[in-house]
Length: 240
Image (tube, rainbow, N blue to C red):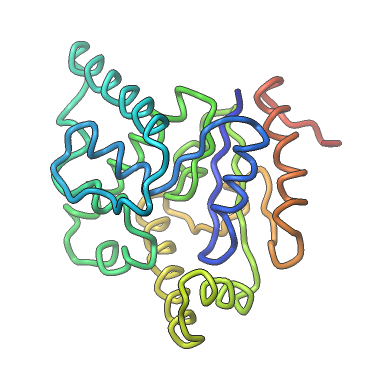
């Protein structure tokens, strides 16, 4: 089954599209909270994900088992270093770009490098298992050298993004505007440091969609057949 990696600016509705695409493809979707729960289950000692925000544990258990098996095979083969889920990593993985602003822009290269490498490795491991939609955390950049992964970028007008954040987070206009500013900054710094590019670099994606101009339902109508075609043929034809 297909693997899809979706990245979007705050308020561009990347999670909404990801969940809709996953439903239509009948595959799992994985977001930052599930990455954090996987980290905890694999063995990291960190604070648990909020009970109210947890996703079904069956998906988490399956992917945690996959990651654990990959760690064990790596150790047996003598190719692995320390497990990439060290203390505190699930707390970092659970945070939004907005909440990561102070971490990603901190002067500590150790923390930044640990977060980046941990994220990179777990996303690649999960993608290798197939049949998943990966939401955010630079998935399209991390998986850009894997030919059968469909990479989708989402953008939207800033005013629309701020209004969506206002509604989603129950914030004032000023608070939502600040939220978007911090999220954009952290996301940009993360992409620059980890991938030497930006989250709106069109060359990272097979397709970029403006959700101010196109509804999520229409976007899913477009993305789902592309994901199936790329999975089946290993390429996208120019008339797709």
